[in-house]
Length: 192
Image (cartoon, rainbow, N blue to C red):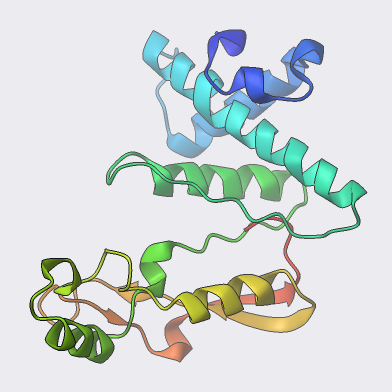
């Protein structure tokens, strides 16, 4: 099952598979996800065909980046709504923590424009249905996103990562107050 996953072939060290390491990582993933054991075939495929190889791929990319004397690796993860991005990120954070690396999650959803700016954007473009709510290009604060990612990759005693409340304003959403943003101390971090 380990060599059959779609991500495995992307690993730079694929021929030198460390089975005991992958087994230990798989056990951490199983514990983090609270999967019942023995694992079903589908769970084995999910753990060893997705979670472990994605972690190993990111770890490998981070190792290459460190050789170039760069500290922070920024990884973008995308898939359809409900596809498991949050779960994957939660697992990755725990796996990196177990190896002594700092991993911070910054979701694009947390960089939506504040409610007032979204309402203003919608009013200015009343004929454009794509700008009548959050989610589409143009509804994110790209400058804040860039500044946050740069800050997480730079020496800084404290960086705050925005958080967005999608339930605010009857589901229209709004950025949470600055005091409620995720505090990240001692940047740069290893992986974003």
